[in-house]
Amino acid sequence: MFLKACPGSGKTEVVGLKAAYEMSKWVKTPGGIAVLTFTNNAAEVIEKRVSQFGGIAKIGFPHFIGTIDGWLHGYIAHPFAHIVTKYNGKSGDRSIRVIDNHSQADFLHSFKTKNNLAQTGKPAANEYYFDVETKKYVFASANRNIDYKRNLQNLEMWQVDDLKNTKLKFKKAGFATYQDIEHICYEILTENTEHARFLSIRFPLIIVDECQDLSWIQMQILDKMRCYGTVLHFIGDLNQAIYEFKKVEPEKVKKYAKEHEFNILSLSNNYRNCQSIANLCDTLVDNTDKVMSIHEGKQLESPCVCVPFEKDDMMKLPIWFNEYLDRFGIDKQCSTIVTRSWANVYRMRRADYGQIKNYQGRLVMAIHLWKTGCRQATGDALKLFGRFVSEKFFPGESTNSREYYRPESVDSALIWRMFMAAALRECCQDELLCNLEQNWKMWTQAVRDRLHKHLKTGASNFGATLSDFEFLPLVAGNKTGESSPVFKAPSDESNKQVLVAASSNSSPQAALRITTIHNVKGETLEALMLVSSRDKSGTSDGYWTQWLDDPASEAARLAYVASSRPRKLIIWAIPNPSKMEKDRLKKVGFQVLAFSTVVQKSQTKLDYF
Image (cartoon, rainbow, N blue to C red; front, side):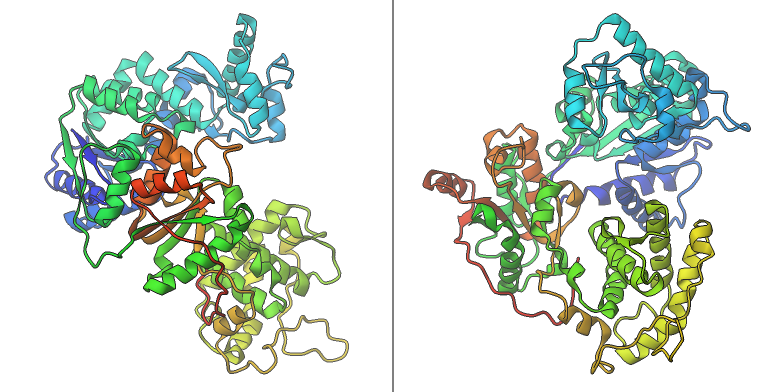
C-alpha cells in the first residue's frame, strides 16, 4: 500500500491506528511489525498513538517503532557488519563505532589516503563514501569548497583503489560513517541472502512513515526483504521531500511504488489549514488533486499575506510579526518565524539575553531558557549560566566568551560545556530552584541553599579540574575576610515575581521562535512567517522567486512544507518586489501589505520560545 497524504490529513493518526490494530491481533511471534520513520520525535508520537489506540503500555518485542537509522543499526549493521568488514572486535564486542563526516579527531590521520586529491590534501576515510546507485565515490566532509573540488575530479583507477583500500582499512578497524552503514547493510543483504530471508521472517510487515524521505539505497535494503515476503506499506507526502542533499528524490519513491504495483490510496482531507492556505500549497507544487479543507474555527479575512521589507531590515521582521499576531489575537507560543538558512535566523535573532546587566537576571534566564528544551534556547542558556558561574566561582580568571565563558583554569571547552549542562539539568529538577514564579526573597534563599550542591553534582563526572573544585555556598553578604560569593535579591525587588522582574530588565524582543524550515517539518502551528533570503546570491532555494519558478523543484517543496504548517495565517516576508512581482504574488493568493516598523510595547512576561 502507498498512502498518499496531504498536509494535515491525520497521517500520524492513521499510522498509529493501523499499527495498533495489527499489533492487537498479531500472532506471528517471533516475527513482528516495524514502524519506521525519520526522527526520534516522530517515532515518539507514533508510539504514543499506538499505546493510545491499542491500549498497549509499552511497545516491545516482537515489534519495533523507531527511526530507520535505529532499525538498520540495531538489526543489521551492529550484529552482522563484521561479516563484510572483517572487524575482529574488542572483548567480544564487534559493533560499529559511528564517526561523523566532519570529525577532525586525531586518530583519523591513520585513515587517510596515500595520495593527495585535487590539490586539497589527503582525504580521510570519514570524508567520503561509496554511492551504490552511481557506483562512484562521493566526497562529503565539513568543507564544502574542498568537497566541490574533489567531486569534480575524474578519478583514475589508482585513485579509486587508494580510496577503496583506505575505506576498507577504516571499516576493518570497526569504524563507519552513517553512509557507510547503509552501504554495509546493503552488502549484507545482497551477499548473504539468508540474512535477508531471516530478516523478512523477523519483520513480515514494515510500515514506513514519511516515505518521501527514503533514499535510493534505503529502498533497495527494504526491497531485499520484500523479495522474501515482507509486506511494505508507504505513507507520506511526496511534496514534502526536502532532503535533496541526502540524495532523497520523491520521483524515485513514486517510481518504486509504481514498479512494484503498490495499491495507491489518498488522504485528501486537510484538517489543519484553512482553505486559502490549502489552495496556496496546491499552487506551489502544481497539485492537480485539489485538497479539501475541513478547517475548524473562523477563517481570517486574509490568511495568506505577503509583507515586503528592505534588505537591511530583516532584524525588524520579528517585531512586525509580533504586532500583527497581537492584532488578531493569535497565540505566539504556537507561532514561528522560519527561513532557509541559519545565517538568516541569526540575522533576525538579537543577542538580547547576553546584554542582561545583573548577575541575578543571568541565572534566572539561564534556568528559564533551559527549561524550554528548545535547541536555540539551550545555547543562550549555557552562555548565561557560564558567565554567571565564572563570575561567582572563578573570580579573577580570564574567560573565553566564545566558549561559554570558560575560565582559564578549565582546560577543555567540551568538559566546561558538559558540566554546565549537567548542572542546569540538576537545577531544573529542583522544584524550589526552578520555580521562577515565586518572589525574589524566597528564590534567592533557595539559590543560596542549593545551587552549590547542584554545581558539585554536575562537576563530579568531569575530571579533577572540576570535581576537586570547592563550590562554596552563596551568601547574602560577606563579612570582612570571607571569600564566599554573594547572591542576593536585586534592590527594591524582594517581593516581585522573579521571572517578570528579570524579563522586564532585558531588552525587548518579539516573543517568538525563529528557526529553519527543516526544523518545523511535521509541526502544526497557528501562524508562520516564511522569510526569504535578501537576494539570490549563494542560494538555489532560499529566495522567494525560486519557490514559485518550478513546482517540481525542492525550492517549491521547501515553501510548501513551511506554508502548510499554520492553521490560520501564513506570511511570506520578501525583499521589496516590483509591480510585476506583486501581481505574480496576488495571482497565487497573497494579499500584499506595506511594511511599517512597530515600536514594541514593553513585555511583562517572557515567552522566549
